Image (cartoon, rainbow, N blue to C red):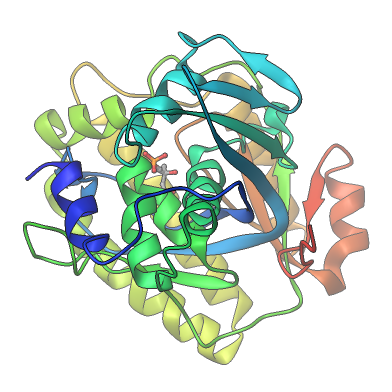
Length: 331
Ligand code: PMV
């Protein structure tokens, strides 16, 4: 099944003539229980479910308008060359929706690109929400989540605020593989970004996942690990048990990286300073600071802690940037 078949099915009753413009914001998200491995490469269908936390005002705002001629794409005010990876991905995605025209697409990312958090998640989610407005589709979040997934898997979680679960689903067309917000809140939860390197990673998540699934000797154990960690994270969110949440998230991230290490050729996103930062987190924890980390397909650490420990954390990690997941974007 092709992406265009899914789009056709979801938009069968929607208008296909664009209006004047659409504009929308979507938050970035950090998985507490990770997505690593696809059962369908074309539709970005995952092997397991995953669970994330959206990052409030940290995200992307995208404005889109139709134009005659080829697409023009801006990122944070700078026009991107059509052959840049950013513009090429945006244009390929827009091919799914356009008739015979181009688009002006302007994205402002409040997520500092240098923090290694400029994942495609908020970008694709904001683009889908802006398209929904441009075309007046009036689609529900479930359908928008499915459309965002076609751009980038983790983007399907960024169409929601708060804690979000992406159901793996089992259908070949992926209509049951969408993200849903959880009825849980935790206003005191904070995320701290420990930047190790802002350099572009050598291997993207798509290639890293593919190689891990195909060759990773430890990958077979991953679905069971995710199932256990999902239960733990759900229970921790329900009871606001921070230690339980942190343990599950840190262990889940390290296990994901272990599956990558078991691939051939090995997939390793860590730099020496990533390992140093892990030791710093463990040492801080030994000293009594309630802090845990998670990591994605890159060298940077994302620390989990509670607002009540902010001053301890600022002393332990003076270079950390703090994200408040409950801060709202009113753009
Ligand atoms: O959606 P992608 O292709 O950017 O993959 C995201 C993969 C991780 O960030 C490592 C995990 C996750 O669940 O976000």
